[in-house]
Length: 226
Image (tube, rainbow, N blue to C red; front, side):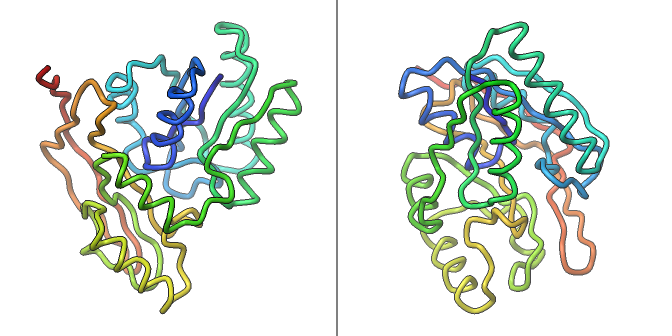
């Protein structure tokens, strides 16, 4: 099974859920050339190889020109490669409620005759956030683009307190507390099921008026003590 992998909370949690159910996973990351991507996660996608190492799973990375047609072609190319090299029979995604993303992955699955697995689909966003925190994942916010989410959110670790703040902001501004509409993106630096912890040594905030992202400039993998 090939899993679309952004390094954010939902794709990492999906990888853990599917691995726990006995599925053999291949992770793939498509890195868009800029933050204007239609389909894929942009901030810090270059570091998803570290999470694949931490998870102990094989990983494919490809770059893509930004544009709906171009990104779809990049997705087709990666899926075709996974079929040829690993003989996969299924595609997986951490999509929660975006019908746009669901239609894209269903389209690609149908084109290649693959089953589609979306274990997070339809989950209540706040309950899912709590599940992800309680799984032990250490999640940091790496991008915000919504009213109520300012520059001070960049680099924030998601915990019970920040989830409560997101709940209040959701009620006030109507933003998605899980960020699937692009309001927020994340990066997982550690989890109980990681073999390594990711240490961010240097980063910088990039802010553009009403939105921005945390640019990880240097990170290292640290083995965990047994």
